[in-house]
Image (tube, rainbow, N blue to C red; front, side):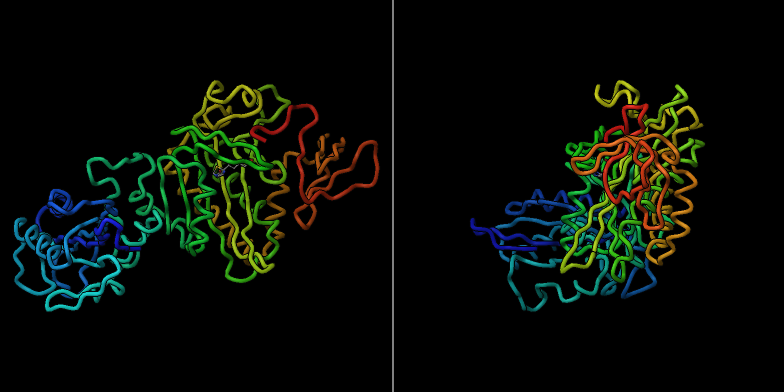
Length: 441
Ligand code: BTN
């Protein structure tokens, strides 16, 4: 993570902690003074975490963060600069590891090892200290997480940090009821695609349950290479990592289970939401004969050596759009929760994310344990295609058929017209014959 730059400067990670007086004020001052110090530039700052004391227990909880700096100083000069800032801010240390207004530790300095009296680099306890490791991971991956004794306290804490008031990670963490899903969380104001972000994070080895959430996407992707319109403040766009503990049981069932999770989440608003094979969420439209698409799911496998190791589940939900917010090609077929006749209220994105993660975890557990019958039966109960006339597109074949429901393998059984033997579809696209089809799809 650290390196010595060509211009002779070094990247260094520093840990800052405070547990006396206005703790956030001291951290803010510490970062500002570091940045004002000649020869030091603060490049990045992690969020602030509240930490239970570890060494000397009878003292107030700390606020901690980690910053990345660039400096042309040598390690001893940097130490001196840190100590000067500590002293200026009135640190008065009665006890080693005891209370302090501000403590600044050098964690790493380029790739250098330093072993001098009073200065050891890398910091000898940095590996074992969660209040260092958690913010370091945030700087490395962009993901927030917590560990026992280290709680996320404030994300947008420096004046120029962007904050999404209805998607504040500290609020989400406070209210999260899941065991795994969302415990490592990346919230981004804007990204190209949460699915791409998650793919990169999965390659870096992030754990099962990691979630990327964005306010808006500039290149949101749908199934079959289509786009997913993702304007800011209007929808929910998230991707979640499923890394089953053993070889994935029937990966084709997971998309159906996720469709149920989204359906159950949206139904809590009173909306009459149905599933459309394989994993679109639709609502009956006001004309009494057509359906409009409210949400979609994109499941992608990342496999290695033949066995499925990881599945990226991307979910897009239209929440607050009005008809004119959709581009003209989607206007007749897409809907949002706000446009849904049966929804009594549009919940906040915070409430919705929390409920969705909990439903996804519940369905994910059923899938992982092989409880497919329960998933398939629940799906059949809300399947909007059952018994309807459809147009099927599979590969370069297009034909008319009647949908006959889900098989025990999660495929769709259709009977091509005129009445022939029925066939099973494992993939493809099905549209209602008397409508223009799914929205966004
Ligand atoms: C579909 O119905 O075609 C699937 C749409 C999936 C959209 C979501 S939004 C979050 C995640 N990021 C993406 O780029 N796509 C998925």
